[in-house]
Image (cartoon, rainbow, N blue to C red; front, side, top):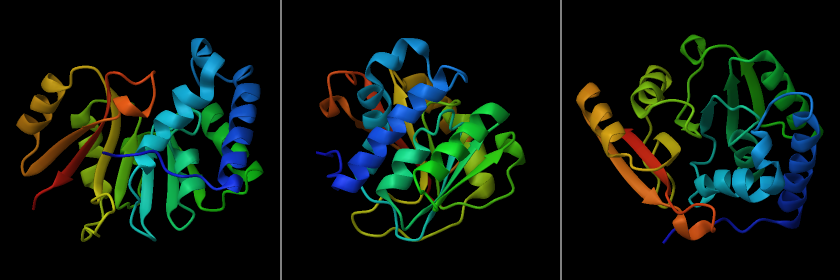
Length: 208
């Protein structure tokens, strides 16, 4: 069973500082829903840290589609300093806020790109997202930029990793109709906390 990562004191301090800044900036820029501000660490940071239940391949590039307030980009950048994280968002205010928070946290491995996902011209081994779009759309974005790579034992296989909730049957079926030669795995994160009874990680990867 997957488990949340063990954080060093420095990582924990950085993530709590991030929450403080996120809440402060959220009073001016809508980074997260106002109804979620009572328990940001669990609702947003712990949720994002579910993606850190397994390591990413050392030296890999991870793109976060629709990062919003830096989720999951900032928690992943804190946990995986050897990886390069690119936070993509089409809203300039959000992109600038994430860039500011990353600089304050000293996250030199995180960069921000402001624009539509379809227009990003970079390359990545992994794509991540917190339900920013449908699986079919997210896979279209990922396959356009993906860098083929071999799987490394105990690490996430290169591909698309999404945090999703609810019944995913129809969404997965739509993806499988639209995309050829993909494999889809769903891993529940219900044990990660009381707020995630119907939440899952969805891994989509190419079988070519």
